[in-house]
Length: 195
Image 1 (cartoon, one colour):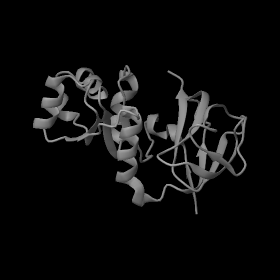
Image 2: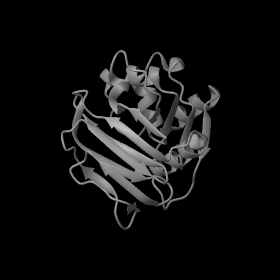
Image 3: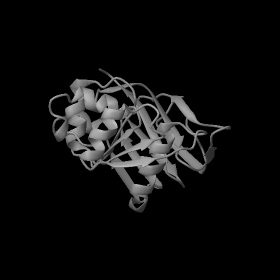
């Protein structure tokens, strides 16, 4: 079964895309933050991303509590960690130093949404006018044995995506306005946006 969605629908006022918001230890664009937060089905922070969330919501932190925070907790400020702990946010300590906090947070996220069936064929509408110039496909947790795409400058045809071999992190669009992705395992779709 093919699903069809517009990835940047979440930034449009009338958008109703269901998505998960993962906050990293990077500056947060306040212009998009409130819209994304209010529409996200699940909200998470990767370690130091909790600091960013705490500070960007200063004065109204109680209205912006993440569902979980994961990482090795070497970047989160002690007072921020304690605040979210007291507020009942799930803290998931992942000590593996061979993986980044982002990767570990994605692994937790994958487990939380596995039952939704992420594999299959998906049609992405990339013609909202908010799209930036680059996009990418990244395997989550395991290699993707068979990935086929259309609508990209460098399409894949039954190719394996796996760290250490091929990972499509620097692709772009072919201007058709539609990208299709068929995969046997979950993938992370990344794309730039115009600010």
